[in-house]
Length: 116
Image 1 (cartoon, rainbow, N blue to C red):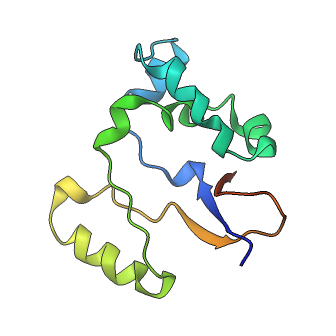
Image 2 (cartoon, rainbow, N blue to C red):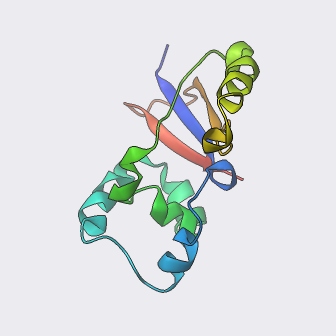
């Protein structure tokens, strides 16, 4: 296997209420600039296509470290999501935001591709 690519649907990533408004107003955490170095894991085409989106900036916001990301086999995703939603309203935003697929080129490492 040549490695994997995480394909994330940026529009499927749950955001806290008001987060996009803060980004649009230029309000960021003091650690935001140093976290942007992590864009090296994002496919260059995705950066060009999505970097203007407030949601893109929020992927690198240090305050999102409270989020939890699961990677499960695709045939288990619906059942797991149903179980999580069954835990109550606090978990209503839980969602499938993408998939991990085999890399199609020879670039090393794991790469994030953002998709619509």
